[in-house]
Amino acid sequence: MRQKKAKGRVYHYWARTTPWTRLPDPYSDPDGFMRAMARLQRMGALEDERHRTGTFGGLVADYRRSKHFRETLSDSTRESYDRYLTRLLVAYAAAPLREMTPEDIQRRVLDANEDTPGAADMMLTILRTLYAYARKRHRGLSDWTEGLEYFGNQTEREPWPDDMLQAALTSDNELFRRAVTLALYTGQRPGDVCAMTWGMVAGDMIRVRQQKTKTALEIPMHDNLKAMIDELPRSEEHLFLLSNRRGGPLTREVFLVWCQKFTRKLGMNRTPHGLRKNAAIELFEAGCTSAEVAAITGHKSLAMLEHYGKRRSQPKIARLGMGKWQAKTKGEREN
Image 1: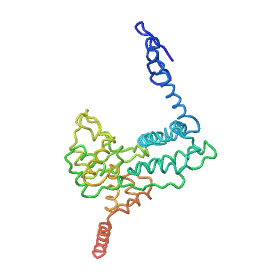
Image 2: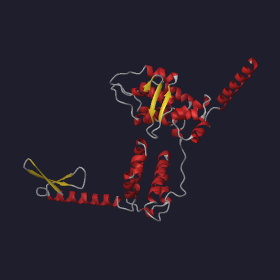
Image 3: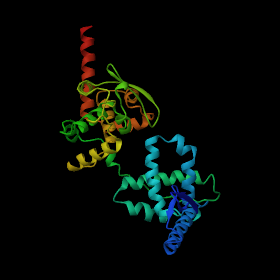
Image 4: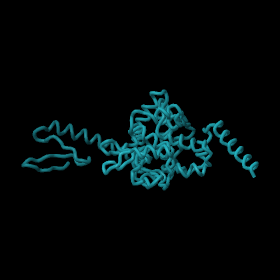
């Protein structure tokens, strides 16, 4: 307990919290003072238990201080991890690491979140990351995620159907329409799209440094994107390409909510990340190689791009290929 004197009065504080918690006066309200002290002591004991070495809460606290969490993860990934770690702490904060089991995680994480399979899958991924971190620091731990399976429901990140995409590109919500256009024609992640400024525009190119991978890209602008950018307001108050009327930037969280609300009205659930897949598919259907697509989207894994490429339209690719063949035949005849 700490005391502070102000204007001739003495105030009492519980100093184990940040900021300090003010207590009732022990002389004028002794019962209130004792009740507050007892409550804060119980809360402190619980917090100590949650962070005790060998518990899940202690592991999470250590991991959040680790170099991997602080420096290796991108800002957006770290924010996502933080959000789901907090949810996992509700269930497992004081749980001893040696008593965690796949059966319990199946029941309390996967089964409990089966209505939101994307969230359940993310928490399972984080639990596997935590186990890999823990086993190097706690000998003899058994894998508490062994045998657990992902729901595999990734519909939120699926590409947008053509009719839905066209509806978004002609939406009455001007800022939403601009955001969809910028995301589609650059093939970038939502956070990178929202962070684009006028300083990144140079002629017919947009320069991007991806937040997740730190990859630097120079992306040629599609004619449709160039036309949209030429119409954007540009002033000292509008630093960002996706700035609102007051000059503030569109946030990744707002863009996500807008996409979900818009697509759910049309009977599906899609996110801004799905537009990145749309961009890759459009490029493949235009006849681009995996290397050419990666030069625009910034993908490091060509295998992932080939996976995206499986969604391209076979008739469109066939027509493109036949057109090239016919052009070759025509050239041979003329020679």
